[in-house]
Length: 183
Picture 1 (cartoon, rainbow, N blue to C red):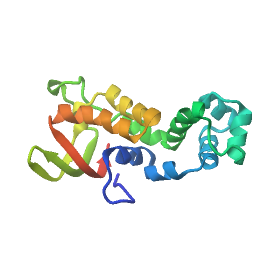
Picture 2 (tube, rainbow, N blue to C red):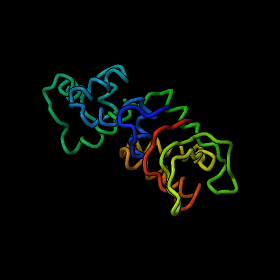
Picture 3 (cartoon, rainbow, N blue to C red):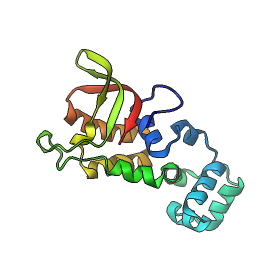
């Protein structure tokens, strides 16, 4: 998928866009009310959202109506994680989870491809636009881990999880920006 919006993105934001089809800034800019409505739309009811958030149905109704402007400190992280999860489409999530093709997490146990990234990549002194295929060095469990990191902790955590795989793919490799992700 070609990355829309800003032509060049950091790794974490590009992962989110590949999973959701939306720029991460749309999640960051969403009000509590908009986020709660998105969660209800995704999971079908205020009860389902309340169960995911660990709050009462009445609290979710107050989020949706705008009566509560911001989740409490106790609920803020869970709310943000649920909102990120609501924005990730099930089909893209499944396809991304299947993009890890390696049978094991070591260079001798490579797979057939899967995740491919195009952007500005630096290895040692060599910096240029190129395709890399870290999916060939990533297990399906690691692909799931990247998605889970995105949901639970956001783009920076997902980028860190993918960078672990990229360092095994080519030690010392650094991705400056992403233009396209394919899986």
